[in-house]
Amino acid sequence: MSESLLGDISDRAKSAFASIPFPSKKDGRWRFGDVGAWGVEALFPFFSGKFENVESSVCGKAAAEIANGACDIKIFDGQILQADVPGGVEVLPMAEAARAYPENVERFFDVGTGKFDLLASAKSEAGAYIKIPAGAEVELSLKLASSLPVSASSLIFDVGEGASLKLWRDCAVFDRSFSAFRTLWLAGPKSRIESANFKFSGEVSRAYEREDFKVSDDVEIIDALAQASPSHSRHEKNFDVFGRRASVDSRAFFGICGSITHDFRTVQKHSAPDSGSSLAVRSAVYDSASLAFSGLIRVETSARKTKSYQSCRSLLFSPSARAQAAPELEIIANDVECSHGCAISKPDKDQLFYMNSRGLSESEAFALIARGFAESSFEKISNSSRVEKYLETAF
Image: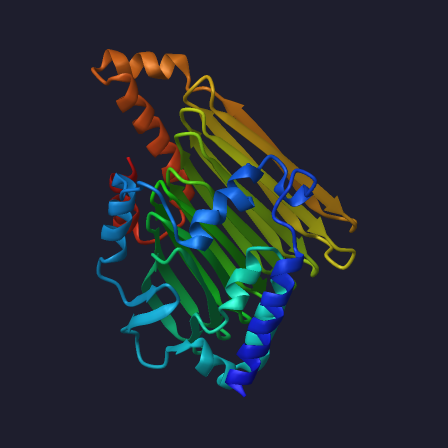
């Protein structure tokens, strides 16, 4: 059954992949993005495995060091290499998950319809299904690494009713690797999820990730993402809030340098009353790099008394740095509170003058300002020592 199910998923994905075009400027889902970085010519070295005169960058070596650190669960290129987890927690390869939870596995892969979603579906056997039993309180650290020219894998977190999961993720993409990664969060009623995701990649790499959150009654989601990498990336987050009295707090920080684009897309969809969601995006942009952000809040007719917010703030540390944001609201219900805001600015001159007068160079002052910007993305993450360690690495 499992081999047949995963085989069918893989065959459908491979067939559909060829018929879906690569990103273009006509595709609204890639608005502001650097479509050239995700086209045939740019990705050909990854798909062919042929790179000319490319050595491992400093960032690529750092990614390797991060990937090889201590953790509870280690997954390299979709293969589970380590799973030291508390009793009752299941960490299943996708083949076993297809036997134990076939409906969830099939539903997960059927949702992915984009060009790069299908890469993960084509390798449906790669990845893991992590089951947190009802009522359990679990804290896990997870390391994910991509080293193959095309590395595709998936994760499904199935968090049972009344369970609590605190997850710390380190994601590393090595030089000469294209990473296509997908994650599904199934949040059972009255569950709580606290997720901190730190991403790092080599300069000669690509990182694509899509996360889908299925949020039921009385669920609390604390979600934080940080990415400080000198390579093109795209990250999509979709929150499907179909439960009553649910709460989502999602924050993201991007440190962007060089001549690359970090592309971030979000959807906050509400279809049940009395729930709320909040999204805060922060970016520190250097050199000729850019942030491309697009966020949608959609409130269905059944979602009265929804409270949903969205903000995007960017600091530009160079005259040629760019940040572009496109917040959207689609409100079909009455009696809701929804809003969005966007701010793009340079570092405050008085603040810089003060730090310079205290002996800090301009680059040190920039790093301190950016770090303070990043810290706000982790205000609700309880493991402060891990946050501090990441900030020391990034800044």
